[in-house]
Amino acid sequence: MTRTLSLTVAATLALAGSAIGQEAPASRIQGDAFSAPAAKTAGTAPAETEAPNTGYKPLLPNQTRAPKPAEASQVEVATAVKGLASPWAMEFLPDGRMIVTEKAGKIRLVAKDGTPGPALAGVPKVDARGQGGLLDIALSPGFASDRTVFFSYAEPREKGNGTTLAKAKLVEDGKGGGKLDDLKIVFRQNPAYEGDKHFGSRIVFAGDGKLYFTVGERSDKGPRVQAQDLGSGLGKVFRLDTDGGAPKDNPFAGSDKAKAEIWSYGHRNVQSAALDAQGRLWTVEHGPRGGDELNRPRPGLNYGWPVASYGIEYTGEKVGEGVTQAAGTVQPVYYWDPVIGPSGMALYTGNLFPAWKNDFLVGGLVSQGLVVLKLDGDKVVTEERIPLDARIRDVRVGPDGAVYAVTDGTDGRILKLTPKGGAKEPGKEG
Ligand SMILES: [Ca+2]
Image (cartoon, rainbow, N blue to C red; front, side, top):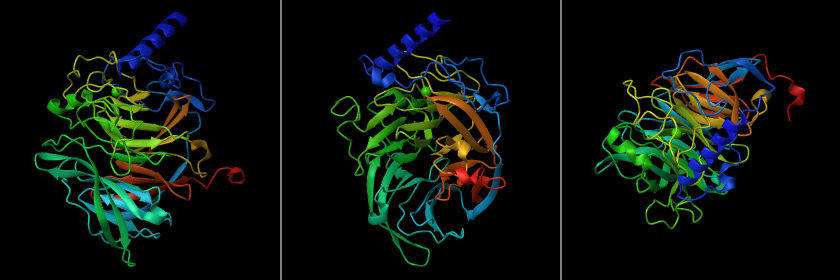
């Protein structure tokens, strides 16, 4: 047993190292737990009860179907906002109001009483066909003074479309509306492609002022292989300066064979991203049938798509050679089969749900609810499902410690989750 485990560790170290053509520095590997610590809060059965789509076996302990917590969370669900047309992303402004994107190309402020304001003027034209449209939004870290918002969208291009990151200044009219002023394109994912799928995308600011920008690989078998191509912008996580430049300490800075903005590669369609309590990036990407993945993208590493996957094509065929491991690629920390359809992700930092402190909350389009992941030593130790009977597109934690889940679709709402019967042990919150 010990021997098998150490061989697996050695193989995985070698795989990760060859991704960038060099020995893997130990620091890149530290934090990859090869055993799963047992959580005190863990029960015995997994949250997932349906049969998997494949006979693939996980390489690592607790890499899928981790146990549910022994004690189920008791959640009260209320509608905080309604009347949104296919909302995609939401952020809280410093004063507690919300700013929301709608897929067709509208950005609205939402008053504290939950009333959506008129669409802001100055939003660029988006390609809203299929999975495209206006996507994520993030506040500049200096928003309180610079009033700048960053947002991503499927941009119509000369040859098709592509995911674009822009920034603009929010100028309010004092009546709940206003405009975006001084619009600047920050970064364009290239090449463009004529299609309507897999645009990503999420925008996450790191503590050092740089931002992570996740995209997709455009789905079709033609373009998807570019997820492995460091000269292409498809299927990547980027790390950018706020003006779109590549930070000098990016893994491929100075390379003439790779785009300097790339942080990690081999991704499929990343619509969930968040920092952990240590400030490190984590993502959840849409897999094929049975292959959604939680990853901790590290600089210069290859996350495997479409070479290795725990899923299969939606047609039932295998993906590529039908392998779950490949030389030079990093294993997912965790995967789902059947899929959850991940979109939106937040680290729970509030006090209303003490059991969720520092857990990841992931939105599920297919699973129609939230997925609560508790980690220990970079391994998932419990997975809980919070059913919400709606496709969940985005998740945020409010300044009040409540969890807000954005529902997908034309009658879009924002749901507010609080503990049933009030917070547990309120005296111990701090
Ligand atoms: Ca992968």
